[in-house]
Image (cartoon, rainbow, N blue to C red):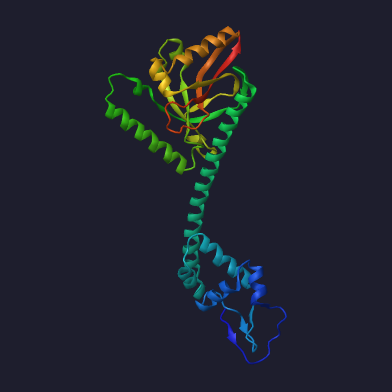
Length: 297
């Protein structure tokens, strides 16, 4: 509403002076003055003494301006709508703002889940260290994963360029899943098929698994079933493994042996979850958690 410079007396009851109106809007008088100067939100009238008065009904206008501005609309675009608030123009400006807010919300949710999952892994590692236990039984809930076959990376005949292209493709896929709010984290799990492990060739059925967010679960094909799992903490460094010539999969075979020694039988694939953060130091110890579903023999 346009302000009216008036020389006659208007009852001030029912109207708010600029300072009070600014306080209710949780803004400043300077902001109100700027909005007034550009014709965005103007006082209902200005009294002889120079005080500007606003109507309580203008609180909704101010909130609309603030919401649109936070959603990315420019003050110029907002001003054009307020100058002639037609339905079509309102639909356009608010529709675009709602789309931007939805995209920002997806991004914020993805960041929240990523940080939450990182914290959960850190806490899991801390529990292993505090308990100083070598193994444990845990009842795990069902979890769904996006899965990529990595078996080809262990093929001796695969050219190095093909392996590098595969890695770049994997990173791109992970980032896409995160950006779309379909995945919970970049740090993944790895799955080795039980039958391939029993056959002595785990490299033939080795997969990267990315935990799915709620929105992504219907798009996944791999489910780790709920049940009782035998778990062990794995500690290794890249340079130590290279120096010893130890196979990456040796620990998987050791896990199967230990499971049976303790009176259990593996009934599902083996999952490996990264717990520690990788800093790029190949001499640093990296911790992962091995899990395999079991039953008593």
